[in-house]
Length: 136
Image (cartoon, rainbow, N blue to C red; front, side):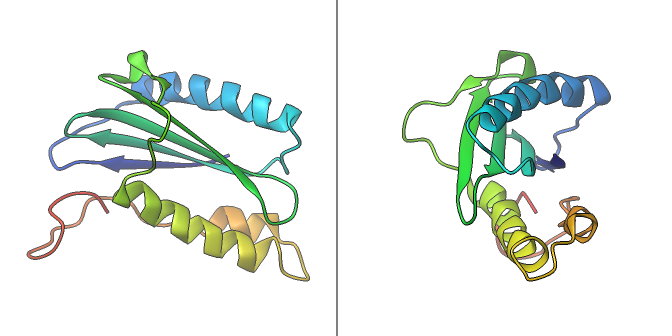
């Protein structure tokens, strides 16, 4: 499991929040494993202005993936997101990076799980003077 945290400007996270989100993500990964996942996946904990989102993506056989989204007012309130809910643009940025990393390191002729694990997007907030005001 490859973890990421994305925060809106001014939002803070702590280890307890991460541990709580990890429980939900682990349950989803266990379900995905039972459904035939490849044992590799990504978790995005997103602390937004309007709540908390948890995106769990696990890679399945060959070129497929499973995507589950949880949402809540707080990390302790995470429930499956409403049908039709999709990742935010900031979560999609992480998922886009992860798709490219998976293709490069796992689907290539020489599978390199360690290189895939090391190939992470820096999601720490950065000062921007133009463009989207929060996120990565």
